[in-house]
Length: 301
Ligand code: BG6
Image (cartoon, rainbow, N blue to C red; front, top):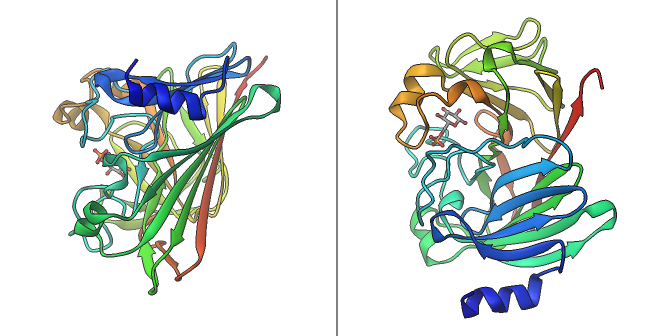
């Protein structure tokens, strides 16, 4: 183990529950393993790539073809998209989904809770590199709790003197058995922006089902449930005014080099977010929070 990893383990490791180690592609990550679950989060992007409650199947999907390279986004898991979503409100921002997912964050704290829970905090602070993309001063924290539930809280602090506006997403990739037999509930009657139909606003009738590429921004503040196979995955949220639902289907999957051609039936993204037209302003000295809670029920159990 390198000296740097040894020092991090000395400071933050929790025997029998959490260790800092080298993950795929030689990138550093935090690994959690308790009686409640296993989990993994990379320093690059504060990117959760794995969460599996004990006795269950993995809930978070990760592409077998993902890059694991410094400065390249990981495909799957929970990318933190910040401070803009996609190419931003006017379609002119780069890199796509912001820079936070491409940067190395710092581990700030770890803690063991009851019932096999492990909580940790990662932080990204504005620096020369972030200012090249975006001229604001900030601290961005991801507070993650791995347990029978996966709780992710994204906390934006404006440490500057002027307000700024952010788009943000906890871009959660969920593992499903078969997208064509998957339904997303909780969005019935909501308006959504169809990103694949000239951003037209439409109304959701009944549960969301999948028969083609799907890329929608729901104006929805509440929980969504993904029903797949015998499992129901709940994505609860707070401080989030939009929910993105995405599956690339056949052609788009083929066009993405870091996404296996045959992998699209096994995933769906249900993203807890504040994205255009619902970006949020953060005033100087204030803290903005968005929270997602993922949990699983085996149906008919
Ligand atoms: C989704 C967007 O959130 O992320 C899609 O709605 C996009 O339009 C997808 O294709 C993946 O984005 P990326 O940048 O990780 O390839």
